[in-house]
Image (cartoon, rainbow, N blue to C red; front, side):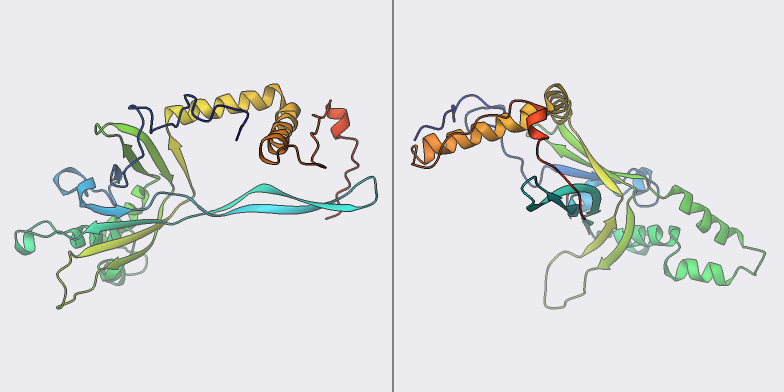
Amino acid sequence: MAFGFEVFSPKSFQFWSSPALRPKRVFEALLVFPDLIFGGEGNQAIEPYLVNSFSRPGYNTIGTETSEYQLQSGDFAKIDYPTQQFSTKSLRVRLMDVAGFGKAGADTAGAIHASLAMTQKTMTFEHEAAASPEGKSTKAYNRLIGAFAAYPRLFFILELDGKGETGGAWEIWNPVLTSIDFSDVDYGGNQFATIDLTFDYKNFKFDQNWGERMLNQRLKTIEDSPTNLLTNGLTKVNNWWVNSVMGGAPGMGQIKPLGSVGEVSKVKQVKTG
């Protein structure tokens, strides 16, 4: 079958024929908490090796809107187009619950409990609030309230390549903790104990040089030829389908590209909804 283009010509994503490319591995990434509330500091910091697994960001829904247009023939047609509405997919993080050196030693549950107290949760905060008379807060209560100013604006997910170097970085903007789950105690099991955290967030960004170049290149292509980009693309697809797949079947004729913006706008468009 003739496709009309070189399927196996050198392309950017042909990892099977280029030693410089390979599929990403699901374990080649690090989650970084750069803040004091969830990340901590110094020897007490929640380091990436305590993170057992985590999800990457995304969108649960992307908004669309349907409009109805009247053609010159009097018929009506509907069109769906994207809007700026969206809802982000929650970020799920699973931590290893590590402990050592007795009651005075490092403990992941203890670190997360401190995080919760700094965000006005747990009985630690509630006791301090109850001990503060109205109009005369205690020092401990004011410290816990003031800690909220350190709530993080950003989390980072660093994607690594096969050499351990950073290939790209996800920025998770304005994360908010929405749930926490300490794993159950099970006398019949032998699994590691974990702590599951769930964060909602405002939006995300993937910072990667190649992607930024692609964005600018595509925007420039659209800016230079906004109309011909669509019409020529549809023409090529249709003609390839007719000639290569359908084998020039009767009734399957080629289409010609629209000549100008004026020809496109000949269709009367009346928004009714």
